[in-house]
Amino acid sequence: MVPESYYLGLSATLFSIGVVGVIVRRNPLVMFMSIELMLNAANLALVAFGHRLGSPDGQVLVFFVMAVAAAEVAVGLAIIVTIFRLRRRLSVDDLNLMRW
Image (cartoon, rainbow, N blue to C red; front, side, top):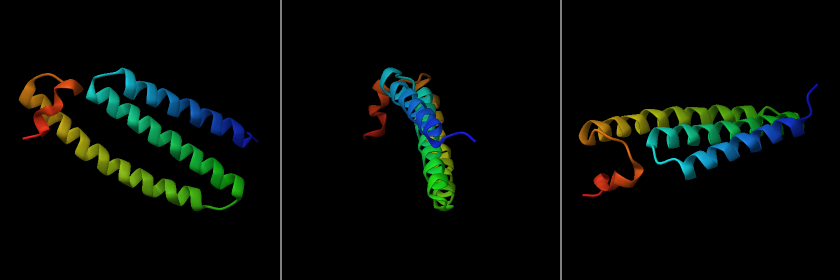
């Protein structure tokens, strides 16, 4: 059996990679994938804590987080595709287009 500390270490590593991806990259698609990586790292931590406590509450919470993440993906990708169609390039620095 794998100890919970390994899962939490993996979760912290994945979350750190996601934070670095959001801070360093200027491409909205890469930033979007990094945010999803951070959400999955949080889900892994929730499942590990739920397993440690012996209750399914962590898995139930992960289910709701994944449902919200799916809605976020749909809206976020629609916005990114619309901006790409208008501008023909993707850069976070040029996204003042949303303010009218």
